[in-house]
Length: 427
Ligand SMILES: *Cc1c(COP(=O)(O)O)cnc(C)c1O
Image 1 (spheres, rainbow, N blue to C red):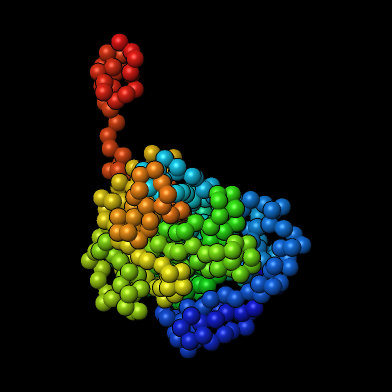
Image 2 (spheres, rainbow, N blue to C red):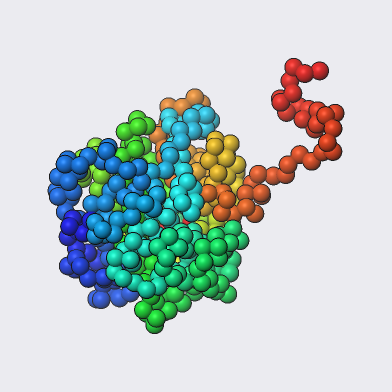
């Protein structure tokens, strides 16, 4: 609630701004670099939580209302976002030699991805400010979550997507009734066009990178991991997150830090950022402190993190440094394998979501995460599974393989199943 908001700070020059104004970026550092961070009076938040404990609140992400930049009346308890389950993949942990492996299934959000956290807060904020139309550029999930929440709010919505977006995401957009502009170019070009259009037509710009309010929605993922950690043996050693623009990892880290400052958790995890091999500018930036030369020739099956020009790289790199973090890169085969493994443990993941798990495996192989001993004993790891496998059926079929095709007879069935351990004990 805005009563707890103390203002904004530019992540580049540290200049601070008063709360109140609908400010997107720092005028000194410009609209590309001058990204703002939202600040809160955490002592006041702590007092509010003592009076009205979290434990008694609705099981959705609006339970953290004091840490959202919204008026009390703008909070939408009726939009059921967040409080996603954390699955204890104990068989998989054992296979990987980890003490514990947790999969936080963000595919259970209303439009089936983590992005619902940001879009719900963005649309609530747009409503609070009386915006007429809301727009965003997206690799897919930000768009569908925005279109879904705009539909809930009855607000017109314009979406810019690269023409490569998977069909199930496009279908969601069109059914939610958004005006969908399929840009015959890269995500970066779609992003530029959206920013120009917001300026020209006065639309509310939902793009996470420049709109500080949106990252506050993503932050609830970190607030939740912290609060839920009491149910799974405490704060994990590592939280693994796939990285595209960088807003997700930055938001989750901010949430974890706030919960640490508020005394909800007594330690912080390290962050494992996961990028796709060939599209890994954040890995470069963490090492060199600057962006690599633009190279948009890389390709990955993980469309949601196919971001050659990350808009929030500074926030992502700051979070990774602060968290003693590491970035690993994974290729398509590793991602497809992780989709299969994740599915075998009950979590249906789209490629970018499975990438986090693929990254955990890669980090164990590289000796970054302690694991690999048979029977456990290694680190405790939580992977954010950021989107549902339903988002990209084509990739899911590549991961899952073919069904067993037979003519309908019991003999055919018996011979097709022979050797699979399903018909043992039957002659
Ligand atoms: C957007 C997205 C990410 C990455 O988030 P960024 O804020 O772009 O770093 C990861 N996984 C999925 C499924 C996403 O939709």
